[in-house]
Length: 369
Image (spheres, rainbow, N blue to C red):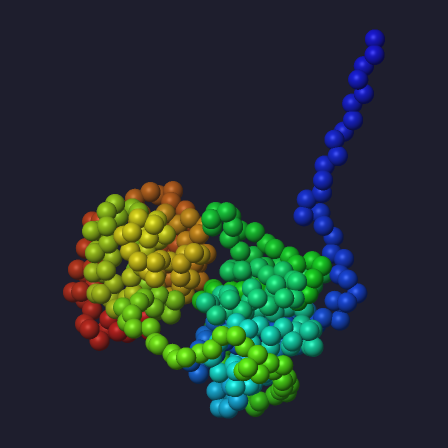
């Protein structure tokens, strides 16, 4: 009787089994760069947050930390350079030319790409702002390298590779991504994800200037004028010292007024979790979490929010998290500093009344100090 021979099926190796084999052309790429985003004459705060994180990465790799400033010739660029050194940069690369006065993808992408090809950084970090996301995608595509977007954590592993961690599968998991065989290793980080480093006044250090290889006539898009955002009611959640937010546990859209009342009583901003935006109960600019605003307040009060990982990565930088939920097993209690198991619909009015009774308008302004 014959028997059929059995063979073990061959399993294709997964990406986790891929070994780092850096091509020779990338082996002289060194140093950590941070793109300093200029926003109507001021450096966007996320750039300083990234300099603080870049400083840690550069120290681990024993390389230099460099800032990159693109803008028009003049005081705006020089002030940004001085701030880069005050927040930890060892040197700063400058491309200053009239076509860089306002952000346009073509000249900015050309300037940054040429800088990278000339000076060869191993890591390039940008803020995950509207400008930063647009620029980072274009530069990574042009350089044929990898880009990890909206990172919540950055580190370097034992062989010096950048370990960029971000949420995936709709925020239900965290994954760490490596760009093993290409350089530079690029990542974007949203505002307020990283702590703000301490500013230390320093003299301006080494500055390296690079010419823009484009003139205005080469650029297709033209800036006709600037119209400021007139939506003054837009939330400033990312930089608020005190935030009160509501979730699905509030049960109905009208109960969000309880969150707003408490926020008003203590001089706070108000926000919500993602499901409430999806239901149309609050506008998107009030959403807190990985797909909304990342916040780092001194006090965060979460009412009726379960605390899934998508929300957690957006708030865990807060100094004090107070969670109110009827479910004692809600995930938010795993990372909240203070948990209150109760019905938020009944508790919020009582808390608002207590604050209103005990706080004067002046003390409300000082609550977060």
